[in-house]
Image (cartoon, rainbow, N blue to C red; front, side, top):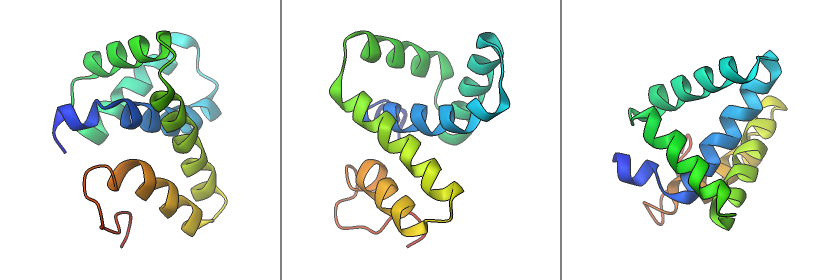
Length: 110
């Protein structure tokens, strides 16, 4: 995916929710949390972490519904993976990460 595709509201929210859910378990302070979050973003997407941080801040400040729904879906994705619910994880991934760019594909693992 291109950087512009990664920076859509829904994808920013999805990855923020997934990353937050994983990193929260580490009980980091705010600075450490931000550093890890931005590092994971860069590693997963190859996109500039400062653009992600700015986009997430602006979307969240504006109450963007797509970023909120994406965030919730990302958190659900991690919860499903963590509890071994592969089909639920696949559905969350496909709905928020694949279908928007590649309609009709099966995305995550398929």
